[in-house]
Length: 442
Image 1 (cartoon, rainbow, N blue to C red):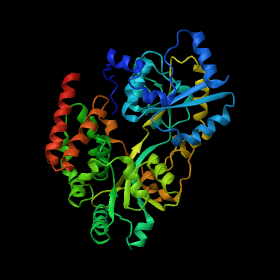
Image 2: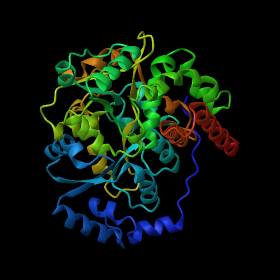
Image 3: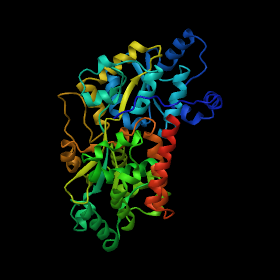
Image 4: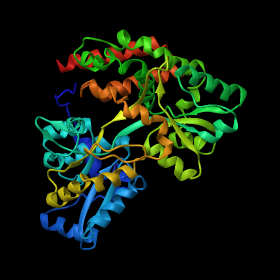
């Protein structure tokens, strides 16, 4: 159940001035942004300078340009009279910077947004109605980016997180791929104790990463059940708590600590180091999605990978974390609205979705009647996806709880991994945060 209430947006004068005067100049210098524009004529002249006489379309995202190489090639081929500038902003700052730029008409023409951002700016009217471009997409994907009876973003291909494993490391050590949660624990014990190989390489510096991983473990046992599927609806109306419903299912996650699969050093390990350890065979498994795969392949093109879902304790259920969580929105105040709309219309076709899919290996399009064949790397999660066992549980918590509670959950679980508090205490603290937010909203 998706809440339609708008989150309060607070952009202080100090923060806005810091954007304009260059306090965040590192992000903007990478993006090539220009703020000092005094008139429409100046804007037109500046566009011509930046694009060498062609129409410049600027696209903002939290993906680096090398993660959008197929999209860039496709758009360059389809629009020879356009130039494209991909504006990269780190995910940690992305939403606040886009909020600020949209508020003073300084945002790019096309903007990558998650569901929460789309809902917020559908209300502020900073993004345009693109319902006509989305008529051939599934109802699920249109609902992800709707507000009222209109759709405000063209769906990207699906997002997901799964377990990647190094097939060569497994085969060289005579180890078979796990088929249940218990066999996963046993496999990790053998790798760590007998083979002296790190079972899992993972960075837990980002609370959202840890939260995602924990919820993925819980998903196979709980969120796929009839009771579990309604947890978000109960939570956002104060009818349930994490302690009441999720505590029993966090035992599996605690087992990852007890078996030294999740370790204290992961709290200080950065993501690049994590990927390097896996790519170079120092760890047997890692967790991630399309961007993780791309980063691994850049480091080691010859690596032999497979994928695993997150298993339940019985092995009867399994899950993948993911769904329709990223869309491309049209800046309602861009001076090149017609041109940018043409680009989005192109991305709503089979060919456009294919370009997006090539940049997100393992994903699928939500375009009706269209399917792309992923490589054998993803055979391990194909059945899971086909059965619809793909979950973004926090999207059902409501707009007010979605990100702050997922972040709080990650912060609390970091302390559990570090041995500073119990899981019961962590969930209790999350419940207090939920109650605090719900009181403010009422």
